[in-house]
Length: 114
Length: 112
Image (cartoon, rainbow over all chains, first blue to last red; front, side, top):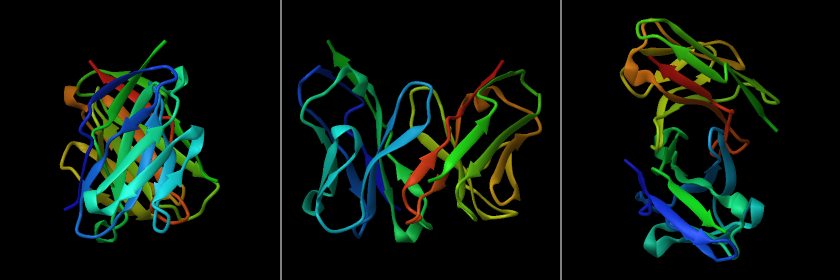
């Protein structure tokens, strides 16, 4: 069965600094890959997605993610973090062998220092 | 694009009481629908999913059940709540590719 690992439970960055959130997956083939963001007390919002093709994908709110097949990774990046980016971030995969169901990582909580 | 409604937004229920959470979807037809639970400070646990009216698949054995009486309505129920049922319940559907998910605003359930 596939699995998703987000190694960092909590990350703190200063406003204006760059950000990278890590995501690794375990699956025999290339899955569909996603990043979601959740503000406190709210539902999850899709940030970006990768199905195939260009391994660098752009998302909303200035986020991007790079798929690296050799490392089974799909790390999320942002060049300059804003205070409003403070939230919880989830990486997820969907595989053809799992009836289209998403498998989520445990999430990374981002704190932004002023 | 899809819009997902959930109600109530918050709920406080005593142990042993029944539960009914409702989710409705607009802007799509015959959607795949999902119920997730998110315990405090933890990730998402898939509880149920449905690919059509009356078709429910359970992911985790528990005292919860789900029903889909209409194409765009998904209900999560319990006959007797446990303390461990407390959490944030999210309803979701899939996008056009059947992969990315779109979530409702959630219901915060506290069992006392």
